[in-house]
Image 1 (cartoon, one colour):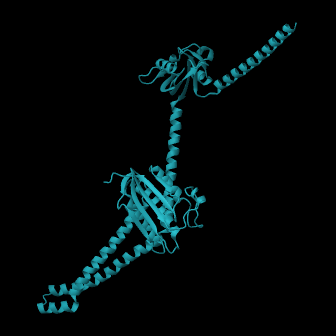
Image 2 (tube, helix red, strand yellow):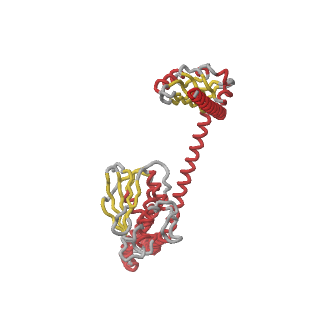
Image 3 (tube, rainbow, N blue to C red):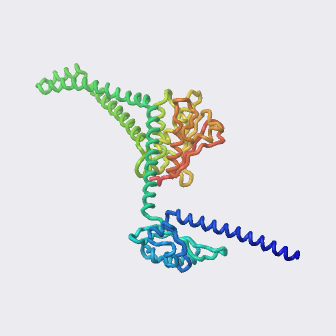
Amino acid sequence: MVAVDRTYAELIEYQERLEAQNNELNALRRFMSSVLASITDYLLVTDRSGAITESGQATCKVLGEDVSTLKSRNITEFFRASGDQDIGAALAQVINTRKELIMDAELIGEEMTEPVELRLSPQLDRRRKAIGAVLTARPLGELKRAYSELELSHDRLKQAQMQLVRNEKLASLGRLLAGVAHELNNPIAFVYANTHAMEKYADRFGTYFDAVHSGASREELIELRAKLRLDREMKNLRSAVEGARDGAQRVRDLVDDLRRLSADGTGEFEQFDLVEAARTAARWIERGTKRKLDIGYEGLKSCSVKGRLGHIQQVLLNLVQNAADAVEGLDEARITLEFSYEGDRAVMMISDTGPGVSDEAVTHIFDPFYTTKEVGRGTGLGLSISYKIVSEHSGELVYVRDQKAGATFKLSLPAGNGE
């Protein structure tokens, strides 16, 4: 009796376990049915021969078939591959290699034919043997729309970044306006004064030439020439012309520098000299400071790089401006720019004799809107924009730690071909 009772108890336990597993299976089937009904992509499951075993509701709707009527029909009836590809061969490849395959195809519906991106994935059993395939198809119109929206968002992001760079550049140039006005005023005033002098010389030479044309004698002309001091005025005229030319050249150089600094950086990459670009940026920073900066240049005299000059000029402007702010008010204030090549990279090290950067600040100096300057002295965008620009040039901008004093930044960019 004891053995019979034990056997009966085991049967009852087995029956309960079987019912529980059956309930789990039914729940899983209901879940799979809801998944198949909710999927908006076209979904088909096939056996090894391509016969359909399951289908999503969206697929049934577009094909105009019920799940029951679709079963056992072959996928080649509903899909046509693009180009030289073959759906049957693609299915065999996926089953044999057990690797996913993506291809362009056409879904042949009840009333229309729709281009789709077809994804074939192997269906594996517990022994990892391919027993069929799972096909999902997404209309290419939807993909193209998604790609179009992504491209539009990317374009807007680039435009926003370009505007941010322009705004930061305008802010930088705004800080230099006083120095620019002073730099332009001096040569313009010199040219203006020389033109007044040349007007006076022109009157004197005009008086002499009138006497020549009126038939004055040689003695009269000699006397008039001495009276008007034409020999001395001739030398003064040449000096005035040279001075006016030098002043005009100075104005032209200032305008050229301003044009280079205000370039928006659009268009293709070009090759330029990093040393000359840095000197241009430094000259503008010097013009905007209240006292002369001690800026030294070391290493190579010329350093060829490839990039967008307008953007790199903004990076250099930000770096030199930060160094100038760091040494402001110091007795021993010096900024050093050193240029070299490291493999296929052109490198500029910019150092200052300022107080340096604290360990806490180092971790945030490239974060947007982070600044250690007083309110109104900085936007907190200079270094973050510079970092972004340099990254887009496949370069690197880093703060060099472990310096004895001051702060040092290292800028590296792809080198040009040196031509």
